[in-house]
Image 1 (cartoon, helix red, strand yellow):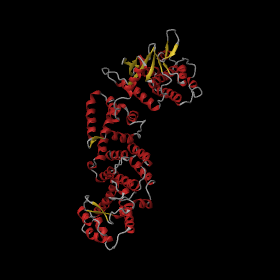
Image 2 (cartoon, rainbow, N blue to C red):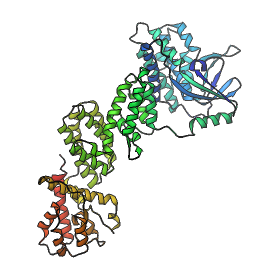
Image 3 (cartoon, one colour):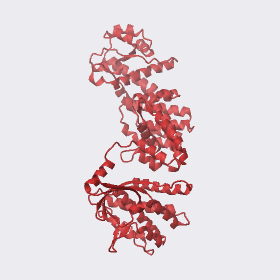
Image 4 (cartoon, one colour):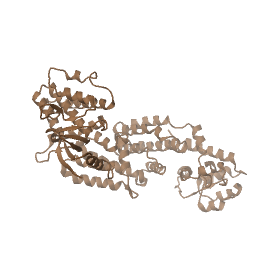
Length: 571
């Protein structure tokens, strides 16, 4: 494969007598504000750091990526890079218009030479030739005409620029985005023309890799290698590179590496890394929920101030310590919070983690009291037990609310946000009639297919052990967690015998002895149990001569009432 690759500046790319042709079959111009702002923030940072930079430090530049071109005579066909070349040209057009408004003709001419070239016959041509975008052609043509007496605002009004299709709209919005951003950057300066020249110089100083192939097949092979082969970097790897890139002074980079390595160690749990999960929930609790198009890395780039990378890394390290507790609840030093984390861990439920990060952080930073944090975790645990575990409420119904209040708690008045969230959650919490109807159907069985799942067994075990702990707490005794599930009416395939009203806690030896006996015979075995809930059952039902569907349903309702009004009371 024959090709030439060189490191260059944008200044080199947009000089000389080369015309960059964007073929009609290339994908449309799809960049929007998310991409424009990323590029603008990078350029702005380069300008800001240059002001604070020591003379002996290497000048700070931004790497724009690789361009792939196919040679065709004097022209270069753009295989990869049309979004960036189109955007850079529109940025330069915005600068031209601002120089025109400042009546700086010489500086204006100094920019137009990167937009318009001249061929051997003395004819002008657009360096980036995008024949498929009429708005692009119009903006380039008008922005490069110097006339300080003519209002450019009217030229670029909607009556002149097309509002369809979408790529034409994107071009128009791109031009106005950079025009407004650059205008805002220079408006407070007493030397607006010099400030604008600094912006232009930083754009022209962007680093790129210029790759040129001799034929179409080679160029597309190169494009495939750059974009499709290999393993994509994970989000936390991209974020790590971003953090280290902006750590200043560079002497602090070793300390930053130690902090990052420590964070990775904290989040390496059960022989696997939880870094990507952490960053998904970290970004959600601080900024917004990521998605396929707006990833964790992109959101952090947009939202984090590059001049405060040390502080950002410190926050990551702190939140990583909290996040670890979601997988290792026993490391939490607060019993109530620990039980809530254990509950959500056992249910493999992650949706509330952004909220938990915000509340734990608020508690640790004394924005709320420990008591308020404990109450929050009890409320969320009880809410999800009733809404999700018992009634099967859908997580996506409350997802946006969770992320919204995670950010409110993190950034604003934490206590007020928690109170507001409680009110919102109450709208989703089931009334008692709904709760009871679902609760009495919970259960587990060895032989009935619908009840023969590990998840159903875990739910029943959790409910029965929680009821036992409630009685033990009342008696100030310790909890006993080692038990088996006893079917009072034998587990013989009858649906009602699977339900929670027919289930009881027993130690394994007692359960084995009572197995498959009649109800009246089982009572004597139950009497030997030390579980408080089992003793209560004996006291309540020992005079019953039979145990049938009515008794199972009525006991289920009794347990539902205890659960709804007392043990998992949501208030």
